[in-house]
Length: 424
Image (tube, rainbow, N blue to C red):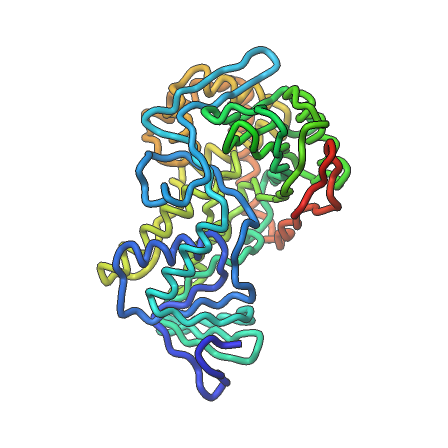
């Protein structure tokens, strides 16, 4: 279905820019193009689904008074990081931690799309052929789009397997309480009192939007997913650990997700006139799974480039040295050289909160990164560095293998919590 009349192979759509995919990365880009006053640009959005409603939640840190502020569900100047040994309250000033649900962002993107006069093609992109002067996109319904540039945010596996491959996988319950149960002035960033997996890291997470309503989540960094029952059991255990009374709770929504944590490469420029955005373009931080801030930067860079008449190619999501540090940290965690709770506890204990958060976002300086590295345990990191170097040499000597696809999130039936049940 084409928004503006029927299109056949004999009548292709000619555009300056085609966006493949319509999720968070594409929505942020549409909003950025509108914000920077990009006009007179022929744009097509190719996606089989018109995104709307609350299908995901993003959490990120940044400075207050950004253009996203009207869209936020909540934000916090303080967060907690808790281990079995202690509870630490961090003041994030001048930053803040913020929650953005998908519905408001999709609405803003739809408005931007209208103001930009974009053509929406509700069909999948079946093939993309770049001849270095134009890109031909053939859609699943037989249509053709010819574009000067293509920005592709569709999920895809990395170019080859990583030396270490983990997943950040999680389930969250949007809980509503009969009585005040949450502190709306403070989010729980990481609570490591959850039972730790044999190979990996787990923690709980609380994002309150009021004293009676919060997203409570269980997250694991590990090589394999849990079962449906496993996530519900872990979440129920964390709910009880927080001292919440299940008799007075209702689960209003359930969120599930899987994010790759790997040092495998995600090529951001598969061809001269195609650039990738989002996770497919390397926006996911391998050591943490955080993605939103890098997606936002990419969108802003592309919009600024187009407004100035430059090619719409974003900068690498993270410096090369950060990707190397992530590979070493992942290897140390995977081989058991360092424990996850201890690793993050030392980072926050020996550095200002702002420095740690800026490092996790990939915007610290080399001097700051030396301080970050000095916070970790030396011998395990030296061993992980040596092992990573040896593995890189082996990678150069053996043939490349295809990387496995990122698994879909485990989605099950509604859990029973107190008197209510989940509604997706």
